[in-house]
Amino acid sequence: MNQKEEVCQHKMLVTRDVLEVIQGKWRIPIIVALTFGNKRFGELQRDIVDISPKMLSQELKVLETNKIIKRKLYDSMPVTVEYSLTPLGLSMKKLLDEILDWGVHFRKEIIGK
Amino acid sequence: MNQKEEVCQHKMLVTRDVLEVIQGKWRIPIIVALTFGNKRFGELQRDIVDISPKMLSQELKVLETNKIIKRKLYDSMPVTVEYSLTPLGLSMKKLLDEILDWGVHFRKEIIGK
DNA sequence: TATTTTACTTACTTAAAGGTAACTACTTAC
DNA sequence: GTAAGTAGTTACCTTTAAGTAAGTAAAATA
Picture 1 (cartoon, rainbow over the protein chains, first blue to last red):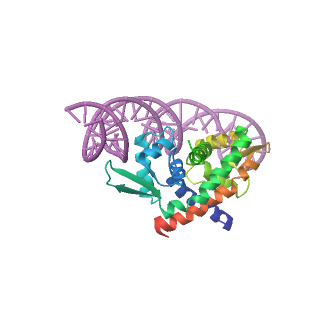
Picture 2 (cartoon, helix red, strand yellow):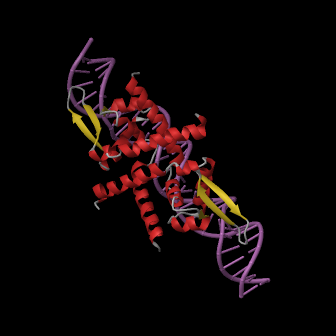
Picture 3 (cartoon, each protein chain N blue to C red):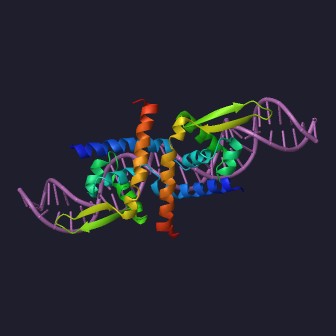
C-alpha cells in the first residue's frame, strides 16, 4: 500500500467514527437547535418539528453518552431539565456551519433556489 | 415566531436536506475515496473495506442522481467505468475536511488518542 | 471451448431505525 | 379531587437500510 492509499484508508476510518456519532435523522438537528442556546425537553420538541418524545429522549441519551451535550436537572416546582452543548459539542460549530453552507449551495444547484 | 426562532427553523430545514443526501453508511466514504482521484468500480470496492457490490452500485446511483458524482463508460476491451466527482461533489471539500478535522479531535477526546 | 476480467444485478434475509399511541410520576393550581 | 404542565417511558409495529450469496453479460485471452 502506497502513501496515498494509506492516507485514504485513514481518512475513511475517521469518517466512519464521525458517522457513528452523527448518524440518524435527529442528532444533527438536535445539536443545531442547541447552538441557539440551552433548551428544555419541551422546547426541543417544539423546535424540532415532527420529533416524538421517544426519539428525542433516545437521541439525547446517545448524545450525552458521547459527551456532545449535557443534561442538567433543576428540581424546581414542575421539574425542569436543561440541555446544553459541552465543549466537545461546541467544537462541532465549524462542521455544522459547513453543513449549512453546503446545504444552501446544494439547494440552489439541485432543488433550484 | 421571533427572528431567532425563524433562523433556527431555516437552519433545521437545510440540515435535513443535507442529511438526505449524505445519509447512510457508505455515501461519505465513497465521496472521500473519490477525492483521491477518479476511480473504477473495482477500485472503489477495494478501497472501501467491507462494501458489497450491491451497496456500492446502489449508492453510486443515488450519488449520481444527486449530481455529486459522474459515471463515465469506456467501451474498452473489458468494459471499464470511471467515477469522478462533479463540481457539486468537489464543492463538498470543505465539509469533508471539517468532518475529518472534527473526527480527529473526537478520537482524541473520547476514544482517547 | 473454457477461463478471466469488469461491472454489475437479483432474490432473499436480517438488522437497525423510526413511528404511534398510550401510559407514568411528580407537583402545583383550581 | 381534578386538571394541567413538566419530562419522560413502554410496548408494539412498520419501514428502511444493509448484508449474503449467487448469477449475468460481454469481450478478450489461452
